[in-house]
Image 1 (cartoon, rainbow, N blue to C red):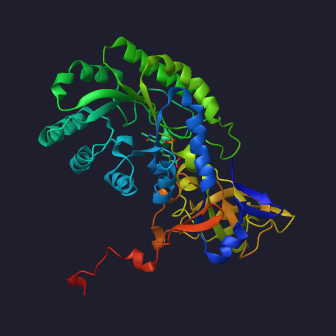
Image 2: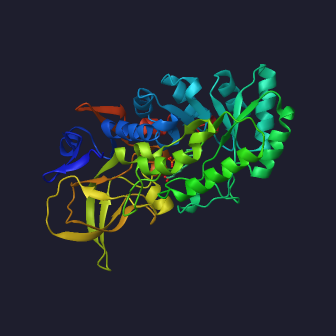
Image 3: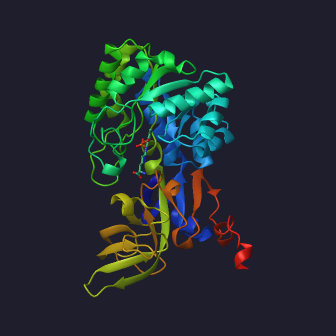
Length: 416
Ligand code: LLP
């Protein structure tokens, strides 16, 4: 289900005209469809129901409290990567038994808080981290659960920056080292190592890499005698931004379930993008249109790489649609932001209806890794987040103000 559709010439979010929303709220803003997000969670839940997994939404994709809460209300748990995400998860009442914690660089303080809060498990990425968790656990006289994150050395077809499961990357532990850890588990007597975790990357639109990596992990499980209780198979399910032949939740489930089914392991999934990616858009306004000396048309908009960095950082494709289709002639544009860098664009060489100042555009599929990666670069306040829920238009995060920009700064006395 995708609830961003045209009715006539106007783009709607669910049953609300986006042209009406821009009358009340200034651009740029992120706009989410509650129905789409819940629907995508339920798609995964239903597709994998035969193995009844714990689905932990990967907060890094979108950590707005309301979006996470909407998912918790459906029974979802959370995958966190920092003390900040733990704080937010607990703020909205996520049961600690539904929180899993990955990251190659957990600090001692973060580890201590997570142990005290009794999260379900740490996904451990190195021996020094395991030693740190063991040491903190001994001090706190508890025995937290940990899963070893293994690196299966599988290369999916995705951007290098979001490939995580190949051996030259910083993530996880190779099988040999993992075997040594299990063989010497008595060295880490303050932790219970009863899980394995694997996450090979993000925006993976094929099933094969998942199959290959899970087979490798299960071979490892079968060879050793490690008394495993759960297997966390990570996230990474890709979505359709452009012309990818992305798979449905059923496609992923059909490939993955048979590999896992007979194993009698509790399964955890950590999808992020699949749940929220197409559930959000970035709405912006055309400030100026200009034609360069080469004849190239630039549509200069009021959102930039600080609001949505994916095109600049990964050369990612996001579809751009006019909120109102006004003109029937089309022209090719670079859709660019106001930031002082040539890499500041949202879309290149796009055919769009002829644009004029004041028209609104929607940058599609911006619900995942959009706001969470936004910054204040060029001293630009971050945009608002708005959600359509049950026919209502709700602000779920105010736009930042100039005051917010300087909230943490002070002119020191030496400079007064
Ligand atoms: N689990 C772990 C351990 C992860 O590192 C990630 C994502 C996920 C789950 C969720 O992956 P997903 O289902 O969303 O693919 N900023 C990049 C994506 C970075 C992904 C980082 N890890 C982007 O905009 O494409």
